Length: 163
Image (cartoon, one colour):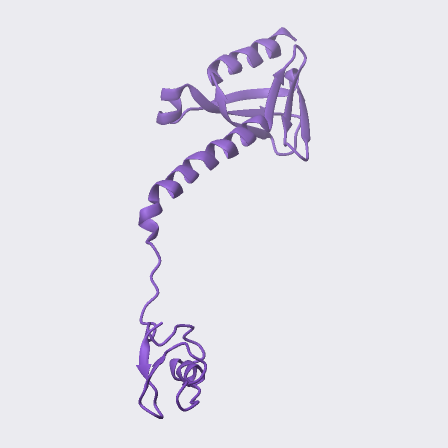
């Protein structure tokens, strides 16, 4: 609230007064019209020149930790979506969480078990296994990121040779 001169009688009047007490001039109404309908600011603030929000760089660690948390959750879900079971006469592969896919292979139908271990996977002890069968149309089933793939390969081949 500031004292200004009345535009009509030049006497001091409050900027928030509805009318000048000396002459009745509508001071508040005229000042609001001068400020403009879309500025939303009173005459003491002036025109809006810039609106500035904090930079996203100031929130870098929030974004960084968000992306560190989400991928392990997705990885855990994808890991639990595949199960391989080796029985004496068959191998069962179960995939999916909400919709399931079950595949059974007789051990006597398996032609070969291939292990693929690129450098990084070999360092951490995982690899991809390809089951080649004579009973399926596709002829090969790839199972990715299996721990100790050579041990699993030897187990499958031992079961195949027993029959």
